[in-house]
Image (cartoon, rainbow, N blue to C red; front, side, top):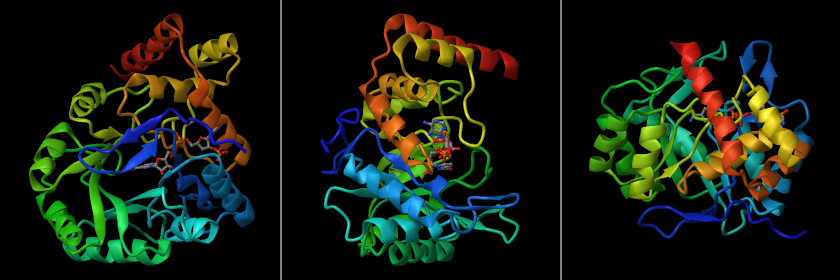
Length: 301
Ligand SMILES: NC(=O)c1ccc[n+]([C@@H]2O[C@H](COP(=O)([O-])OP(=O)(O)OC[C@H]3O[C@@H](n4cnc5c(N)ncnc54)[C@H](OP(=O)(O)O)[C@@H]3O)[C@@H](O)[C@H]2O)c1
């Protein structure tokens, strides 16, 4: 099978790490136990492994994960499906949260907890060094909130100096936290919630693009509340694409530093999502899609 172009390549700032812009987010591979989301093993373990192998076979070389998915399950699935890893595969993980017994997402930002998390990720992924580790701010689990990340970021920078981490990114952060963080350690990527309907990060994305820092939107398809919009459907119908493909193509066209990690537990959806990189949205489609964001903003005021 020929490898897809997947939106072309992106090289992280000042480092020789290059990935295809269309990647894969592994969170959806963990299971669910009642109200506990991203919890326990998936119902179909072979299916989850098939998704990971299909992604890599089709050229994906950027996989996003965390040891708090499951917890531990997603990393263990990645190891089982893909280890020994292809040399060009970049696995990006994140630290600073732990799961409560009730499935909640709790802060774990102390230096001791971060050190433990890095060792857990190394063990569960079967790696000696982690390519990229995102520090996920937990001042507010639901979105960026101001607060100093100096202590946790300094702890991660020390683990990097010890050779356990190659590069550091930030997640769920404000523009100030990115600026302040860059004074402690080079920041190679930022991972915040963003999609065609929720564009609060537009100024941050433009700023990061100038600096060559990757912006990696989570919930690119809406996450737990899948995007639904007549504009997406109408554009999709015109271009013979699905609404989800239109949402992903819009992100790829939004800026050159945008790396995509759509999540899915289905091989069929994976193929559909990867094919979105072949779609070009003409100006009139972009205009229609801008209406989605205006409506979302209006609804929030
Ligand atoms: N830094 C953070 O705080 C943070 C938070 C959340 C997520 N993440 C990362 O970001 C990645 C992406 O976010 P996400 O997975 O939560 O949300 P997402 O990619 O926006 O959406 C995933 C949802 O979309 C469905 N889906 C995927 N492709 C589809 C298609 N072609 N047609 C219809 N439905 C489709 C999936 O269901 P199916 O399984 O049925 O396809 C799943 O329910 C995650 O996997 C994770 O690695 C990071």
